Every structure is written in C-alpha cells, then in structure tokens.
Length: 497
Image (cartoon, rainbow, N blue to C red; front, side, top):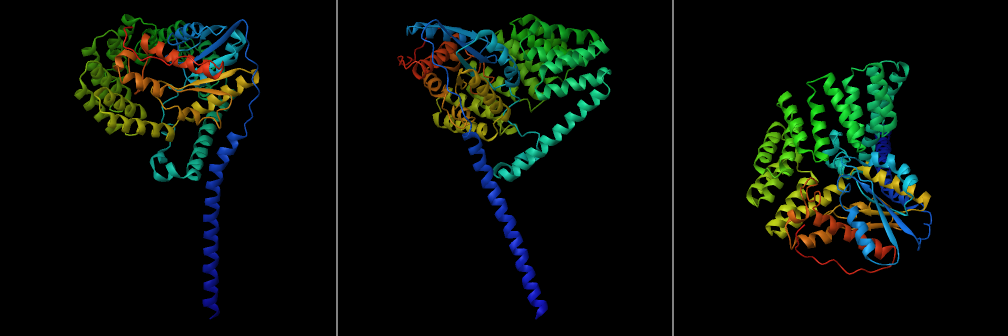
C-alpha cells in the first residue's frame, strides 16, 4: 500500500511540474506578446517645433534609387504651386543601391548641412530582402512561425552566434593588425555592424599593407557604391580588376555602377566581360538583361533573363524581370507562365506575389489580383525585415531630438499598414499611403505608363508621369496634415510623359 501511495504521489508531483512548465510557457508567450506592445507604447516623443510661417521650408528626402532623381523634383514644384504663403525647398539625398543602415549613417551630416524642418523617407527595399529569417533553418516550421517563445529563442541564439563570430574576428584583427588579410576580415565585420567608416579605414589599411589585395578593393568599392560615390567605387573595382583580371564579380559590380549612371555601352561591356570570364555567373546575365531592357532590346533581354534562370533557378529577380518583359509587350500568357514557374521556387517571395497581382490587374482579373496582393501583404508582415523597422525608429529618435517632422512614405502599390506597424503609434508621424491612389490610377492605365520596370514586384522605378503622381500624393498628405490645407484630389488622366 505504501509503495502504491508513493507512486501516486510521485505521479502527482510530475503532473504538477509539467503543469507548472506549461503554465510558465503560456505566461512567457503572453508576456512576450504584451511586452512588445508595451515597450513600443512607452516611447516618448518630444514636442515638435512650431512650423515656421516665414521664409523657406526645407524638406529632406531620403531613400534609394526610387528617390534619387525621381519624385523630389516634382514634390518641390507641387508644394510651391499650392500657394499657401510659404516657399518650399526640397533636397534630394536619395542614393541608388543603398540601404537603411547606410542612410542612417549619413543622416546626422545631412541634418547639419541642410537644417530641414521635415524629412521624407521612403526606404527599406534594399535591406537584404524580406525573408529576414532565411538563415535560420527552423524558420519554415509551424512552431517557429506561430510561437513567439520558440522564435525568440532561435533569434537570440543566432544573434549570439553571429555576435561571437564577429567579435572573434575583431579580436584576431586587434591582436595582429598588421596583416592585410586580417584587416579585410575586420572590414567585413564592421560592414555587418553598419560601421562603414571603420570598415573603410580597415580596407584602406589592408591596401596600405598590401597594395595587391584585391579583396580590400572590392570591399571598398562596395562601401562606395552603397553611398552613391560612383567614381570612387569605379576606381576601386578597376583596381581589383587590374590586380586580378579574372575577377568576374568586380566586372559585375562595375556594370551596375555604369547602369546606375545611364552608361549603357560601358555597362554592356562590363557584364559581357564577366560572362566571358565565368559562363555560370547568373548575376552577370541578369545585369546584361537589365542593360538591354533599358535600351528597349526586349528580345535580347528575354534571352539573358532565361539564361540567368537556367543557371540559377533561385534568382527571383530574373523571374520578375522576365515577366515584366512579357507584360510590357502584352504577352500575358508568357508572363503568367514565367511567374507560375517562379512561385514554384519562391512560394514565400512577396515580390513575386506582388508581380503576379500586377499581372492579373493588367489582365483585368481583379479577384486573382486581389488574392495575390493579400498574400504579398501577409508575407511582408510575417517576414518583415527587422533591420528596416529598427532603422526607421532610429531615424525617428534622431529627428525627435531636433524637433524635425518625419514623413514615412510607403512605396507605390504597397500596403501602408506594414509601415505603421514599425511604430507603436503614429502620433507625430505622417504616413503616406500610395496603395489606393496608384491602384485607382492603374485601373484606367497600364503599368508601363507609371513604371519603367518591376524590380519591386508590384512596383518599380516610376516614369515621369508616375513620379509626378507620387509627388502629388505626398504633397497632398503634407499640405493636409501639416498645414491644414485641403488640396483638390488628383484627377486620373491618361497623358504622355
């Protein structure tokens, strides 16, 4: 009897322990969900300075290639045409190919130089892709997606692992700073931390120690390219090629520099040289495809994109651009087939889902267009890049300290809710929704009237007409929210660029 009683007590204790663990798990899960909300909610925002009623009102625009030389020039025109008794000056500091860490590293210097009253930011599309957890092999499991405790544990583990790896590189470099190879490793570690000035110094130190270190020149070229310093980047990549004439990667990067500058002939030569050196370089094929597409050589571009996909079926950008080539020519069936193959390899790629939505919009299949647009929105929310959100919040904190108004602009066709979720509340922030306005416009026009490509999936770089439309939408939001001026709504008209 005593033995039986002890067994019962033992089972009860085990049950209580298991119940306690389960209860702790549930409470921790709930705590993480509630804690995240509370942490963001208690952020305090400083009172903004009063809007100046006299003189010139300066607006600083931040972003990537969709900003540089694009909508800012039209934004200044539209704002000054509103005749509200104030003169506006818009500063365009967009940089093609950049990302939010680089943008953030330059913000303080921009503010010191231009002293803006407002900052307009449309950024994040180059932050390494939407699939933030792609380096965690557990990220595709149900438990990772739906259990925050489990996901939190994995993220902490990966963060610590990466941190330790970077710190080991830093320690090794500091112990032996005179070796050029170690300096290159140090530069790469600094790049991952977003410390670009330190990375630049490390690469230059490597070159000082060994003028024949091609990896240092390539790293230096990457930093300059991200900052929009094309001439410096070009020099660095050419030096890498001079050291190693068979460096196909340097030729590819050089091709993108020329492409960003509109030097199509030079870009074509660089990409062709990269392919000559490495027939399996899918990025070189895709780059050459871009070059031909910009010159209207659609047949040649089509062949190159197909070659890039053949070499690397995981090249999602090649699928998107191939589909765009077909869409541009009205070959809807071919575009549908291309995107169908793409979704087989990239079922969780929001940009491909967005591209399919754009295709079905063009084909007049509104229900299918809506279905894929909603899927793209879900993927963006589920796999949103945490670096983008972190840097948006850092930007807000920097501007708050100076009393500068922040305007967060969502990309055309994208749902603004994913942008709003970055912040706990929108008090003091102006959000510009470009989804409804552009979708309404595209109900009466083709994609080609508003976009010159489809690099973002459901949007791309705007045509002159598209940039003017984007600028008007941003200006209308600013005038209404900041100056309490209600402009007339935009008329959707078909016009030539």
